[in-house]
Image (cartoon, rainbow, N blue to C red):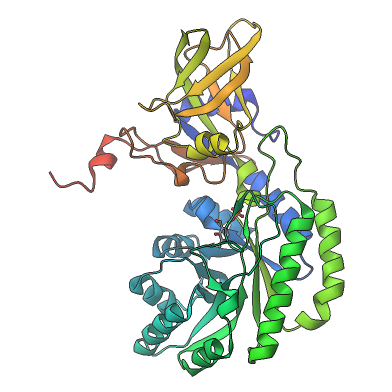
Length: 418
Ligand SMILES: Cc1ncc(COP(=O)(O)O)c(C=O)c1O
């Protein structure tokens, strides 16, 4: 974790803002943005995939760093606009866009709407016609193969995402060209998330480039835009090696030597959530109770998988624990295997499974779950058991900004009729 989030600082913030608490670090957002921009294909742009953390304050930070933004719903487009983005820096990708969402995207003249089928292209076309506009679209492709080791593969397999590569034929493109209120500017190919091997990212990118070039030549599409996805991973678990950014940069430069001449008129873009945000945030939860059960130590905390399901379920899925530590004032003792649990009435609510933790850790101490800036609160079943939602704050060089205030019981009742 970074130097800004020392134990003392975290304790101070937890006291002031309460727990559970998410803390994001503006400096890490800056460092990650610069590092990724510097390491991808030369001349390419990087877009922040806000699905990983949709707070307006976080989106604004990425705008300040010069990144575009990738959205997946009307709600995300609205948040991106609130963060100061304008349509020309917003792209829209989702397998299930409603007509209302498409209309909103067209009205705001988004840079591009990535569509998943010819059918959807037809819907965008008729909505754009009704609004007397011309919308830019790109075809999201589900490629024939997936040769990456993405931890979660999204395309290149049977998938709900994208148009099937095998179906992209003359008839497909003839029909596209007949739709006069859309302009097809290129393609999007997003293979999967959490890739830690440079060869996989390069392999996917090259595959995307070659496929897009072949299709655009064969079917007469002017390739102005090519979204190569990303899937840039982070090291969560002890047995993982972080993505080698030096090697990525050098292999991207080699790729540019191979492909650059053919892509001079094409804007190449990458999108990233996890790499940009995971290490920029921690979740802090306070131990409420300690118990020993049949020889096993349990710490029960005030926030768990209801506010950070990734730490519980992704960890379970790959049988591993997010990096975590205790901040404790108890007398030092030996480390023992400990189950770090949340307050939910389900045995799935475990964020640390048999983690080695000081046996002295007790009620009142803090547990810090690192690598939690991406797919944390936003990805969690927060209504389960009606606990008030955590505050989310960002620390900067000399100030702390509240990005989302702590929720209360009234918030939970807000939309209910009774
Ligand atoms: C189309 C698309 N773009 C970007 C992302 C963000 O991926 P990551 O957080 O791995 O960078 C996802 C994640 O599911 C996605 O589906």
